[in-house]
Amino acid sequence: MVESAAICRYTNGQYDLSWVVDHSDNVHFQLIYRNFPHLNAWTGVAFGQSMAAGLDAVIVKVVNGRVSVSDEYVRGYSPSQPDYSQDTQLQTAEYNQGILKARFTRPVSAVESVVDHSLKGCTPWQFITGPGIVYANGGGGKHTRHPVIQIICLDQCRI
Image (tube, rainbow, N blue to C red; front, side, top):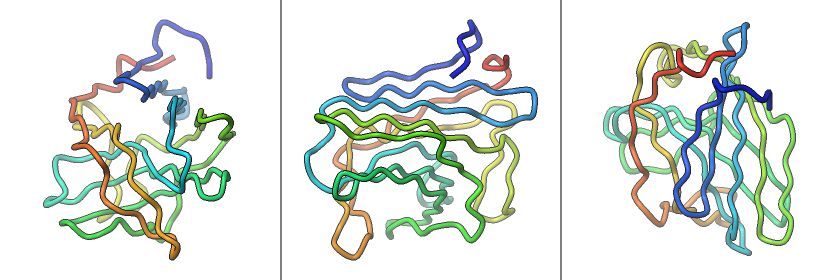
């Protein structure tokens, strides 16, 4: 991640997510989650007001020690589903001794009109600080804490 005063961050307990917007309108994220469960689990960040209205989510999973990132959508109280167009790109990832680290990017603009949310201006973000279990079929269970919602204004995070 580029070192700059423009880096923005949300920290809550073991969960630490930082981000910066580059000149090409891509958001670069770095997630560090300390004491991540020693089981197949997921965390991440979602964009949008509520599950009822629909959320665009970046889901970070650890399955058998391997880290993956997926661009997903959830509406209502059903499990999230991967987007047809995966516009979130994993840069680097590791899970070692209970510490999850992942760097990934996604565009500021929405790629798929229904399932993606634009991050332009000031928008609600939901920080998933309570990991959920990943089942044997690959699906995710409910997060263990309600996500923390904050309005994030990306323009102050530009480099």
